[in-house]
Amino acid sequence: MKRVALSGNYAVAYAVKMADVDFVAAYPITPQTPIVEKISEFIANGELEAEYVNVESEHSAISACVGASLTGARVFTATSSQGLAYMHEVLFMASSLRTPIVMANVNRALSHPLNIWNDHSDAMPERDCGWIQFWVESAQEAFDTTIQAFKIAEEVLLPVMVNLDGFILSHVYEAVELPDEELVRDYIPSKPLINRVSPKLSYTIGVVGPPEYYFEMKYQVLEAIERSRNNINNVNKEFSKIFGRKYGNINNYMMEDAKYALITMGAVTGTAKFVVNELRKKGEKVGLISIRCFRPFPMDEVIKLLEDVKGVGVLDRALTPGGPGHPLYTDICCALYNAKNKPIIQSFVGGLGGRDILVDDFIKMFEIVKEVSEEGRPKPCVYIGLRG
Image (cartoon, rainbow, N blue to C red; front, top):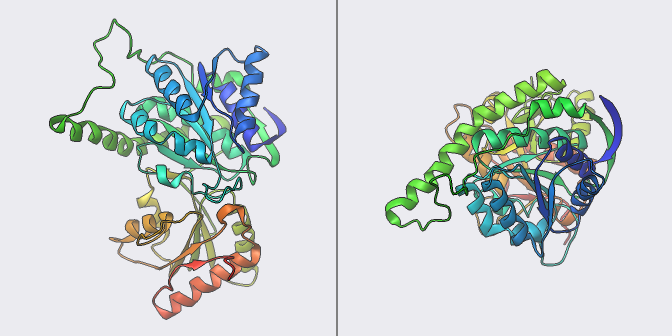
């Protein structure tokens, strides 16, 4: 075990090297590019024996990954923003074809206007494409979750997306504990998966799905992602025993006696924890929940953590124009619909296009949550930092 300073992007690249991948295809896009640049360096230096394919677009990258995965290879790619959007149609194929691809998505706002900074608007349109989705808070968690992602993907035969916030996490250097490479390779041994495009096997790939079969074929993905809940839990437990770091589908902070809470995803969670600490010093019973596994959504865990909470604020960093609520808020409302004790749920949106969410903003969110809890009903969505 050695402790080194790594950016979030480089932490992912080191995880990919230690996972001994067979095939990488990617197209450069800010702020993801350093991941695949570092991986190409590992391959060029002989530190990783893998095939690296330079493609002409993100659509081609994910298409090449699907094909490689169907041969039984361990496959990785990375993208951001418009790149992920360009992959959109193939993401559904990747899950329906049950390809265990691992992809790092370095979250960045979608155009228009053109914006290279961080929010979650790129991944949210892909939440229903049948991929397992993780969101990480630190470079260490980015490394660890990428390692876990290969094991989970190959156990359940579904692709996994690891989301890390652009620039806030991808380009900031932190201390990361890197385990011995052989230990990682023992944990996720690189063994060929079934080669489903081999002429020796009776497989048909890319078939037409008429009405008599389409529903059942899509339902297989639904069943697989539901079954993955147990695999994810087991992988978390096994990882903790071997590497000493523990993760859950959700991470909670000061929730044991909390009466008011916020729910976040991604790197802003660190600022929110600081605010919780400061408010706790003043006697406020506040807590924090960070969603790590967004798909499959950890409904039971959310219900359990909020059963004694009076009010909860949900922070989205993406919009659902014209919808009944924004993405994470809507999922929390659905999760709590049949809960015995329902807290007042207040919607917040902030940090779009990379706008900072400040300590004072989190303090204000907690104040609003407390206010609406006492009033017994939430306000319309509060847009944090919106000017004019």
